[in-house]
Length: 443
Image (spheres, rainbow, N blue to C red):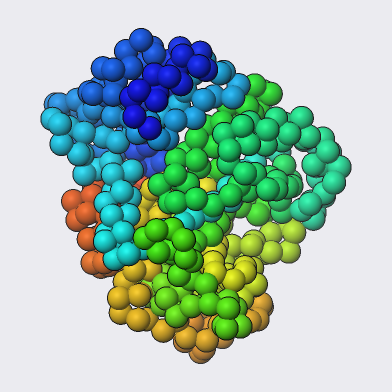
């Protein structure tokens, strides 16, 4: 969208302000509010931020300002405040693209894929809880939503009709094509699904969706959380990525093969092979927090399953494997969680998949059984490995993965490892209530 088209939209829709937004390493959205009267200056120079104050962006307090220059093709008018338009931005320093900008990192990877004749198409399925804060703790907000197996519960969904019909209506105003939303596997946990699109657009949508869902929840006096594992005994929040590669024109799905029993081409199987090959290092990006690994466990929740695969497997329409084939021409990665920065996650997954294609990595046989029914030892006897058990282990894997380092940028990976190892150390040095209860009088 060029500046003239944006100016016309401002006049037609009555836009008075732009919310210029970007995400830092942890996927946290930062923004400034800019009056529409400054549109020309915004388009040419963006808006300035003190980078050190805006999260993990590779800057110190002495460094020059970061300029957030908006991509006007990402424009979404806030449906609940129609005089404000949200814009996703790329970061620049001294007029040059800033290599620590997650959106820029993804764009660089998208260009590499385009140079090979590929378009990466993705659909994302965010899960989230609606909770209340009570005495410094959180709890599912609806006391009537207390079943051990609440998934798809009609009454629980009905009690939230106002919230979800409003949310779906707003998303469809933005032409996202929402096709379903539901009560998920945990109490007061929900999921919403919209149509797939090219990867950069899909990441912008997810970033805006998180902002919108949180904003609408706050209007109800609630907190919407995408935290991977907010409750010990309940299913955690995933964000499943449905993926396919298309030709440069966007007219042919290169993952589609009608003659294959599962509707996948050789290219698709090689892409899967790449993800399996890099699965343990990918975890550092797609499951990026200490809390992420409390979702990736073999023990069940109160509902009977975590729905979060821990074994490096793929299969047909089998929700216990890491990569599911839900239908012809697409695959689903089920281990991405609600804390993942979508731009970094997609850049890393795309790099792994393209490496699989380049090396023609055979993913091996499909896994058709219930992975939850097997012990770690039994799976290892089948030569099936386990995802990392914690963030520290995942970071060690990322440090050795040169394919992902090249995709994200070696300097960026060094910063990422530094930030995330500090996070691990802070967690490891914290004495929990469990430890006090377990060890206070031991020995």
